[in-house]
Length: 148
Image (cartoon, rainbow, N blue to C red; front, side, top):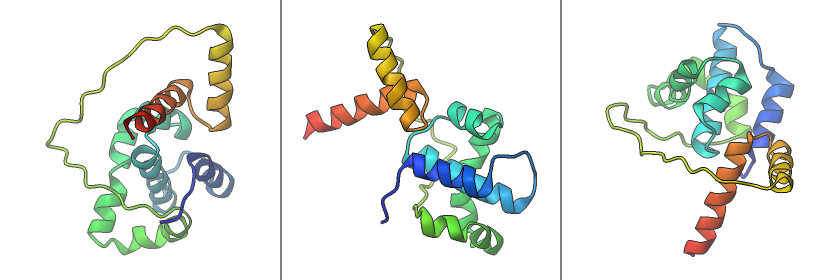
């Protein structure tokens, strides 16, 4: 499968499609495709995605699962509306069982020096991420390398 980054996905969406308020199916299908990729592939939270796309978290909660269900039901309109995105950013969307409870997430509070916080902010901005997502991603990557 083709490799790409969250920054590439966001830059493409913002540059080619744009972020706007509309209920037009063509736009909503594309937005939901990108939301699902960012949520499932790159670990963005519903709150972060809500801020990026200027919609509330509950809309993100619904939007993130639409690509799986519409592709699973062979919705021709969705497939046509997202064809270009699927070619540029291919992804196999996971089945999300709404009846099961999500994995428990725990909070950890850390203290950073001003320099470390500034460095983390620069790292996050370079990847179009929020600082908490960047910190989580750094920690997860380091933990994966330790487990190997």
